[in-house]
Length: 119
Image (cartoon, rainbow, N blue to C red):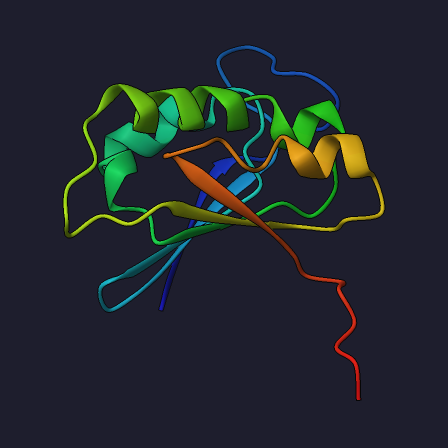
């Protein structure tokens, strides 16, 4: 497993460094955790953003989601292929407005990681 810090500053980007975002890679699986300011630029240095398998958003503060819409737009502008499914984005559903933004038709699908399964 490999972990790449794409951004680590809190609150706002500063002096060429972005806010919270990490890329976790294991074999051919690529997971993005959070998408703070500057994420897409840093991600492109190490991985084609279209190669992501999933995204997890820890919470919806701007320093953790600033580039999420940018990432979704990047996926939207590149035609979907049979090999590439919708981008799954995991977030909590306690903020229904922010959670709904995880889904962009024909681009990404939001999944609530706090959703309780019925027994």
